[in-house]
Image 1 (cartoon, rainbow, N blue to C red):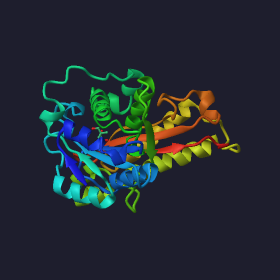
Image 2 (image 1 turned 90 degrees about the vertical axis):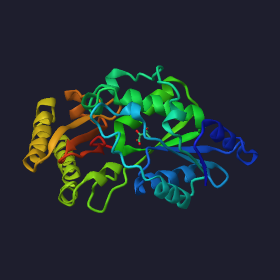
Image 3 (image 1 turned 45 degrees about the vertical axis):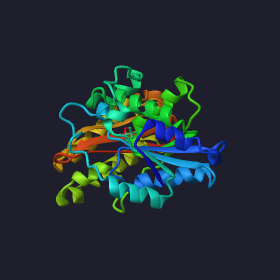
Image 4 (image 1 turned 180 degrees about the vertical axis):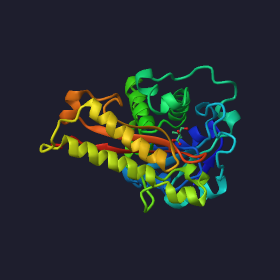
Length: 301
Ligand code: PAF
């Protein structure tokens, strides 16, 4: 695996004659890699084939961290990450220092649609998605991949990147990969490393609460349900799921069922019908803040 800290070196590596015409698959990361990331690398390889080029990036992007967030303590495990990527079949790693990526303050930003970027994670982390979209656009412009693979664990991020690519007509296929989980259901995340032993034992409760919410929504949408699911009933189910976590010592930001298409609240008619939905949750367990989500297909899907 070739490791390139510079934009010029990365562009030069991508010009190699053997690669011309073959696809380039990119997996953008902030490092501290786990099996979830390595699965995305495997998916990129599966898609571009043996003659294509699989690239990954490692860059802890200051722009997407708010004041008081964990930018400084975000785990940096570069040597280990390189070994894991090489083993997973990555060909090229773009790993710039901050001065390479942002040689001067980045004053041009990608400002995503507030209807999508201002809810859920965007409401809890002001400006977060401006930073994500700006760095992803820059990574796309440096690597010029034919496809890029993102995990569904960061569901809203994935949707925003998709919308950005559509609206700017970028010739890049955005591939979504299912969330990779630990055996007890916890979604893999670099931030799981912040959990104490007791918190790690408790952490799958977020996934359980979401599964409970999804089951309740499915049951209420089923043909034989006593009453039609509407927004008032949905709010009761969401509040009950949040209360359950709260009682276990969590501080939930949201557990919310949204439309898959745009992450807005479904109407009564959509709840009663077959609109594809997704249950999303974010909650703090001690200091660490965990995210998860589960898609809900319509009752007749
Ligand atoms: O999901 C992440 O790790 C980051 O948000 C990304 C996409 C690499 C941008 O910094």
